[in-house]
Amino acid sequence: MSETLVLEPVQTADSCVIWLHGLGADRTDFEPVAGFLQRSLLTTRFVLPQAPTRAVTINGGYAMPSWYDIVAMSPARAIDHDQLEASALMVLNQVEAQRDSGIDPARIFLAGFSQGGAVVLHAAFRRWQGPLGGVLALSTYAPTFSEQMTLSASQQRIPVCCLHGKNDDVVQYGMGRDVYERLQALGVTVTWQEYPMGHEVLPQEISDIGNWLRNNLR
Image (cartoon, rainbow, N blue to C red; front, side, top):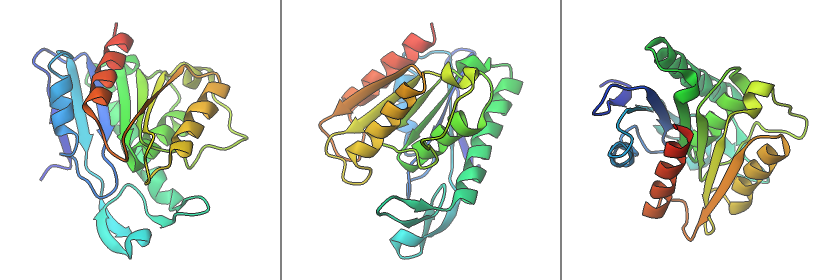
Protein backbone atom coordinates (compact mmCIF):
# COMPACT_ATOMS: atom_id res chain seq x y z
CA MET A 1 0.00 0.00 0.00
CA SER A 2 1.29 3.42 -0.94
CA GLU A 3 2.09 5.55 2.08
CA THR A 4 0.52 8.66 0.58
CA LEU A 5 -2.95 9.03 -0.87
CA VAL A 6 -3.17 11.56 -3.71
CA LEU A 7 -6.51 12.92 -4.92
CA GLU A 8 -6.15 14.55 -8.30
CA PRO A 9 -8.60 17.34 -9.25
CA VAL A 10 -10.89 17.19 -12.27
CA GLN A 11 -8.75 19.83 -14.01
CA THR A 12 -4.98 20.16 -14.21
CA ALA A 13 -3.60 20.82 -10.73
CA ASP A 14 -2.20 24.30 -10.09
CA SER A 15 -2.52 24.19 -6.28
CA CYS A 16 -2.15 21.60 -3.55
CA VAL A 17 -3.23 20.87 0.02
CA ILE A 18 -1.03 18.51 2.05
CA TRP A 19 -3.27 17.27 4.87
CA LEU A 20 -2.11 15.30 7.93
CA HIS A 21 -4.47 13.14 9.96
CA GLY A 22 -4.53 12.88 13.75
CA LEU A 23 -3.21 10.31 16.22
CA GLY A 24 -4.58 6.81 15.66
CA ALA A 25 -6.24 7.70 12.36
CA ASP A 26 -4.91 7.06 8.86
CA ARG A 27 -4.48 8.66 5.46
CA THR A 28 -8.12 7.95 4.49
CA ASP A 29 -9.52 9.89 7.46
CA PHE A 30 -9.88 13.16 5.54
CA GLU A 31 -10.40 11.61 2.10
CA PRO A 32 -14.16 12.38 2.16
CA VAL A 33 -13.44 15.97 3.22
CA ALA A 34 -10.89 16.40 0.44
CA GLY A 35 -13.30 14.94 -2.09
CA PHE A 36 -16.02 17.32 -0.97
CA LEU A 37 -13.71 20.34 -1.17
CA GLN A 38 -12.59 19.36 -4.66
CA ARG A 39 -16.14 19.86 -5.91
CA SER A 40 -15.43 23.59 -5.85
CA LEU A 41 -11.61 23.54 -5.87
CA LEU A 42 -11.39 22.18 -9.39
CA THR A 43 -7.61 22.60 -9.79
CA THR A 44 -6.47 21.64 -6.28
CA ARG A 45 -4.63 18.38 -5.62
CA PHE A 46 -4.95 16.85 -2.13
CA VAL A 47 -2.03 14.89 -0.71
CA LEU A 48 -2.86 12.75 2.33
CA PRO A 49 0.26 11.18 3.90
CA GLN A 50 0.18 8.21 6.26
CA ALA A 51 1.84 8.42 9.69
CA PRO A 52 4.13 5.54 10.66
CA THR A 53 2.82 2.99 13.15
CA ARG A 54 4.72 3.31 16.43
CA ALA A 55 4.24 2.83 20.16
CA VAL A 56 2.48 5.71 21.92
CA THR A 57 3.42 6.01 25.58
CA ILE A 58 0.24 7.75 26.79
CA ASN A 59 -1.81 4.92 25.24
CA GLY A 60 -0.03 2.23 27.21
CA GLY A 61 2.64 1.73 24.57
CA TYR A 62 0.08 0.49 22.07
CA ALA A 63 1.28 0.81 18.48
CA MET A 64 -0.84 3.05 16.24
CA PRO A 65 -0.40 5.58 13.45
CA SER A 66 1.39 8.49 15.08
CA TRP A 67 3.42 11.43 13.84
CA TYR A 68 5.35 11.39 17.14
CA ASP A 69 5.22 9.75 20.54
CA ILE A 70 3.43 11.58 23.36
CA VAL A 71 5.13 10.70 26.63
CA ALA A 72 2.87 12.63 29.03
CA MET A 73 -0.22 14.84 28.82
CA SER A 74 0.33 17.24 31.72
CA PRO A 75 1.20 19.79 32.86
CA ALA A 76 2.14 20.26 29.19
CA ARG A 77 2.49 17.57 26.55
CA ALA A 78 5.90 15.89 26.63
CA ILE A 79 6.70 14.63 23.16
CA ASP A 80 9.43 12.93 21.16
CA HIS A 81 10.92 15.93 19.37
CA ASP A 82 13.10 13.84 17.05
CA GLN A 83 10.02 12.07 15.72
CA LEU A 84 8.20 15.38 15.26
CA GLU A 85 11.22 16.71 13.35
CA ALA A 86 11.19 13.64 11.10
CA SER A 87 7.47 14.11 10.40
CA ALA A 88 7.99 17.80 9.63
CA LEU A 89 10.80 16.88 7.24
CA MET A 90 8.42 14.49 5.47
CA VAL A 91 5.96 17.38 5.06
CA LEU A 92 8.65 19.64 3.61
CA ASN A 93 9.71 16.86 1.24
CA GLN A 94 6.10 16.73 0.08
CA VAL A 95 6.11 20.49 -0.45
CA GLU A 96 9.29 20.25 -2.51
CA ALA A 97 7.89 17.38 -4.56
CA GLN A 98 4.81 19.45 -5.40
CA ARG A 99 7.00 22.42 -6.24
CA ASP A 100 9.12 20.21 -8.49
CA SER A 101 5.94 19.01 -10.23
CA GLY A 102 5.27 22.60 -11.28
CA ILE A 103 3.06 23.99 -8.50
CA ASP A 104 4.03 27.39 -7.13
CA PRO A 105 4.81 27.03 -3.38
CA ALA A 106 2.61 30.10 -2.82
CA ARG A 107 -0.28 27.82 -3.85
CA ILE A 108 0.69 24.91 -1.60
CA PHE A 109 -1.18 24.66 1.71
CA LEU A 110 -0.46 22.61 4.80
CA ALA A 111 -3.36 21.29 6.86
CA GLY A 112 -3.40 19.11 9.93
CA PHE A 113 -5.84 17.83 12.53
CA SER A 114 -4.72 17.48 16.17
CA GLN A 115 -1.27 15.87 16.17
CA GLY A 116 -1.05 16.42 12.42
CA GLY A 117 -1.67 20.11 13.00
CA ALA A 118 1.23 20.29 15.44
CA VAL A 119 3.48 18.86 12.73
CA VAL A 120 2.42 21.30 10.01
CA LEU A 121 2.74 24.28 12.37
CA HIS A 122 6.28 23.20 13.21
CA ALA A 123 7.10 22.61 9.54
CA ALA A 124 5.77 26.00 8.41
CA PHE A 125 7.01 28.22 11.23
CA ARG A 126 10.08 26.48 12.64
CA ARG A 127 11.62 24.92 9.53
CA TRP A 128 10.34 26.14 6.15
CA GLN A 129 11.91 29.25 4.66
CA GLY A 130 9.97 30.34 1.63
CA PRO A 131 6.47 31.08 0.41
CA LEU A 132 3.47 28.93 1.23
CA GLY A 133 -0.19 29.33 0.41
CA GLY A 134 -1.17 28.99 4.06
CA VAL A 135 -1.75 26.68 7.02
CA LEU A 136 -4.98 25.14 8.29
CA ALA A 137 -4.66 24.25 11.98
CA LEU A 138 -7.60 22.05 13.05
CA SER A 139 -8.17 21.27 16.74
CA THR A 140 -4.46 21.44 17.40
CA TYR A 141 -1.63 22.96 19.41
CA ALA A 142 1.98 24.01 18.86
CA PRO A 143 4.37 22.17 21.21
CA THR A 144 7.46 23.70 19.59
CA PHE A 145 6.36 27.33 19.73
CA SER A 146 8.08 29.35 22.45
CA GLU A 147 8.12 32.81 23.97
CA GLN A 148 11.50 33.47 22.35
CA MET A 149 10.65 32.42 18.80
CA THR A 150 10.92 34.86 15.94
CA LEU A 151 9.72 34.52 12.37
CA SER A 152 11.37 35.42 9.10
CA ALA A 153 9.63 37.82 6.74
CA SER A 154 8.55 34.90 4.52
CA GLN A 155 7.09 33.05 7.51
CA GLN A 156 5.15 36.13 8.58
CA ARG A 157 3.51 36.20 5.15
CA ILE A 158 2.03 32.68 5.54
CA PRO A 159 -1.70 33.06 6.34
CA VAL A 160 -3.16 30.72 8.94
CA CYS A 161 -6.68 29.62 9.82
CA CYS A 162 -7.10 28.13 13.31
CA LEU A 163 -10.28 26.11 13.88
CA HIS A 164 -11.21 24.61 17.25
CA GLY A 165 -14.09 23.14 19.21
CA LYS A 166 -15.25 24.98 22.31
CA ASN A 167 -15.87 21.62 24.01
CA ASP A 168 -12.65 19.89 22.97
CA ASP A 169 -11.52 17.62 25.83
CA VAL A 170 -8.51 16.17 23.96
CA VAL A 171 -6.72 19.33 22.81
CA GLN A 172 -8.15 21.92 25.14
CA TYR A 173 -9.63 25.11 23.73
CA GLY A 174 -6.94 27.22 25.40
CA MET A 175 -4.17 25.30 23.65
CA GLY A 176 -5.64 26.10 20.26
CA ARG A 177 -6.32 29.69 21.21
CA ASP A 178 -2.68 30.06 22.29
CA VAL A 179 -1.55 29.17 18.77
CA TYR A 180 -3.77 31.88 17.34
CA GLU A 181 -2.65 34.55 19.82
CA ARG A 182 1.03 33.70 19.48
CA LEU A 183 0.95 33.87 15.68
CA GLN A 184 -1.03 37.10 15.81
CA ALA A 185 1.60 38.62 18.11
CA LEU A 186 4.31 37.56 15.65
CA GLY A 187 2.69 39.48 12.80
CA VAL A 188 1.04 36.58 10.97
CA THR A 189 -2.31 37.07 9.25
CA VAL A 190 -4.28 34.54 11.28
CA THR A 191 -8.01 33.93 11.65
CA TRP A 192 -9.84 32.10 14.44
CA GLN A 193 -12.96 29.96 14.02
CA GLU A 194 -14.60 28.13 16.91
CA TYR A 195 -17.48 25.68 16.90
CA PRO A 196 -19.86 24.01 19.40
CA MET A 197 -18.05 20.68 19.12
CA GLY A 198 -15.53 18.42 20.79
CA HIS A 199 -12.43 16.91 19.18
CA GLU A 200 -13.98 16.43 15.76
CA VAL A 201 -14.86 18.10 12.48
CA LEU A 202 -18.28 19.58 11.64
CA PRO A 203 -19.87 20.30 8.24
CA GLN A 204 -19.86 24.05 8.94
CA GLU A 205 -16.13 23.86 9.62
CA ILE A 206 -15.52 22.11 6.31
CA SER A 207 -17.54 24.82 4.56
CA ASP A 208 -15.47 27.51 6.28
CA ILE A 209 -12.26 25.75 5.23
CA GLY A 210 -13.44 25.72 1.63
CA ASN A 211 -14.19 29.43 1.75
CA TRP A 212 -10.79 30.20 3.29
CA LEU A 213 -8.96 28.13 0.66
CA ARG A 214 -10.85 29.78 -2.20
CA ASN A 215 -10.11 33.25 -0.82
CA ASN A 216 -6.42 32.45 -0.60
CA LEU A 217 -6.28 30.96 -4.08
CA ARG A 218 -7.55 34.04 -5.88
